Length: 224
Image 1 (spheres, helix red, strand yellow):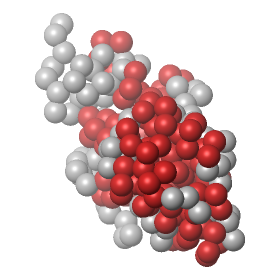
Image 2: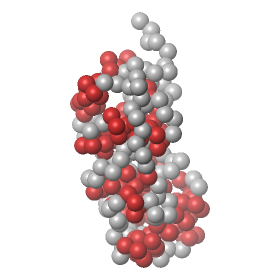
Image 3: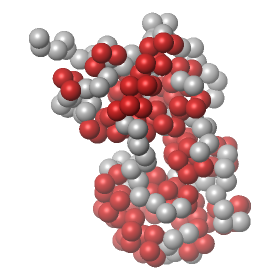
Image 4: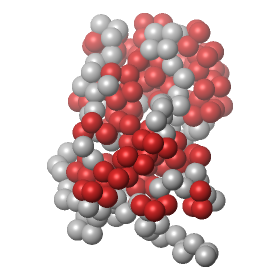
């Protein structure tokens, strides 16, 4: 994916450094919210998280992983059985197809072990760039890109880090602004911030640790 120029009126490098520091102080232990015991389980959980909350996924995956803990077992699963387990996550038929197809591809093409490159991962059924970035960054510590979910998209715009609306373009803006060493943690911290403070319909701006750094793009002025 070709790189895009940083927005002309974007933040200065010093402002970005201050933002990174403030996020790290506010959320020093920000981790992936999806429960998993292996990279394979994280990938399966991330596929399930499409159009679904992490909380709901975490309610479903214990039964899924007890029955299908790894790629070989899930590759041999029956579609109906997987559908019944994951039904409450929504779009369960497509997700079940993707889960089984992903597991079969991992077994057939990678000897049952997940590949560790973005290019190989996005060839797996149900795995797009965001899902691959989640896996590589969280499971393997490989900063392949910046995960842009709904929280990261919205808060990056509020912070004036991007004027883009498409996740791929937002990711490229963030890649230009952030040091590679922060790509993984930045997303985790913004996601936690979006859940705890910068809530979409009722942002708690008055107690926000980023308030002094946030231009609040698109929000009305705070009442004095």
